Amino acid sequence: MSNQVYILLGGNQGDVKETFIRARSLIGEQAGEIAAQSPLYQTEPWGFDADELFFNQVLLLKTPLAPEPLLDKLLEIESLLGRTRKGNGYASRIIDIDILFYNDCVMDSEHLTIPHPRMHLRNFALMPMDDLSPGFVHPLLKQTMTQLKDSSPDKNRVLVVSEKSTHQMSA
Image 1 (tube, rainbow, N blue to C red):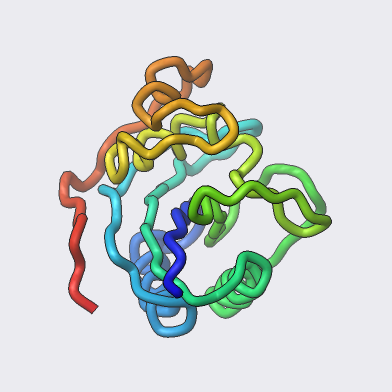
Image 2: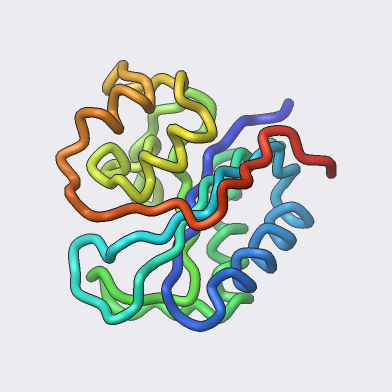
């Protein structure tokens, strides 16, 4: 069975575009097939101050992995790309890979909450998600991505860097 998972890439340190290329390659090799990707966005930091703007992108992943093994694989990929975690606060980082949605699954375990508990409050997640799948309905909030984006309380600037989105990618 193939599960459809929306994943958010984020980062603001180093050559982020190159890191995203490497992240997409590793995700495709180790976690499943990247079926589509949003345009690349440049965004202001959310929840803290940083000198560098962030880049963000949403991927649609088709994967045989269950949620927690997928999370383990994504954390391993972050580590391979040089991510080190320091504390629980928001901070600049080379790469962050978050699971936004896993099918229409709702779960809250010690290690993973799906849907992502704050994505509906963050334009850097909502805008690329809306580009990729505007009609996708949040399984808890029962609103589409367009509805959530249009009612977002987030006032941070989010700009499209690359108009190119790939809704059907070859393997």
